[in-house]
Length: 369
Image (cartoon, rainbow, N blue to C red; front, side, top):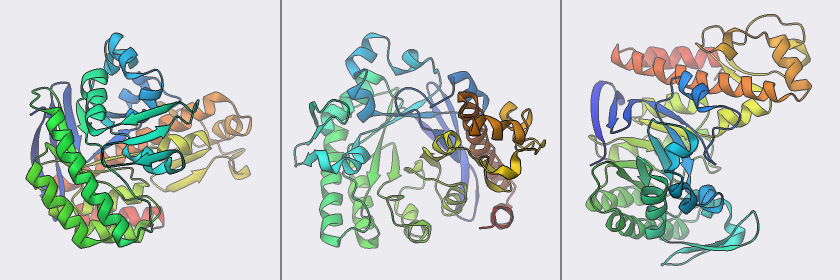
């Protein structure tokens, strides 16, 4: 097994621990910045590392289209290619199958899709997804290929996708085989249907994975419906394995998910928001495009240990964003990733000290949630 998960403390359902991999430790709860195309947009890997990130996420779909997995392998693998020596998790391409449903077709054997870049045809099987992630890219944590359905999903549609995902999970496990330096995660599906989520978990546990993800959320159901699923779904998964909530989300989503027993997260929100002038702070989100910041000489958030958060005034950041300067996008992205790392660090401390309920209540109050 390519990882070892050690729980250090629990507080209610919230938990903190360490995922040990050959490339380093991942402190949980952990937020993984998204490096879709072998880059966390607008940042160098040194800046990402300075935020405290232990792991980043790469995207199989985008990397298989360009520059291509075989080219990355020839150039030494994804870590060497992008100069990141810490752990990398790669998603399987399943989410893109859903989001690009207009140019894709799913069968029992594979998903066939047209490139959104040049229209070229591609076939992605569970076996090919594992080959790309594990052998070509050299990912530390590999995700099974799954079928994700958007919300709202009719029960029959969610049931069919869940069962196909389970069968693809078994094929992914067989293709992955026994590897000492890498790990494979299964993905629970079932939309917002509790019995389907339970059946999915049972099928995945029977197959046996190094970790388990909850997929099929943050696809339009909203915060409340997501939390209702998380009230029961994490407990269906093994206690002694990492639990990863895919594609989530806003800071309040992370706090609520940790309170319900989740360990790992990823989302494009902090980078995307930064490029559009939005910053997440301990006092809530602020939009630096707003005229009220034009002469605000205060730092963005001096409680966040990042140069972008402490060393530049809101007035300067407002100017950069309004002038569409690249530096503005970089600084706000840097700050947002640093804030997410500060948030997960604060949650780890609160859990270890047995005060997570108080932390959660205070965070809600400060964010106006």
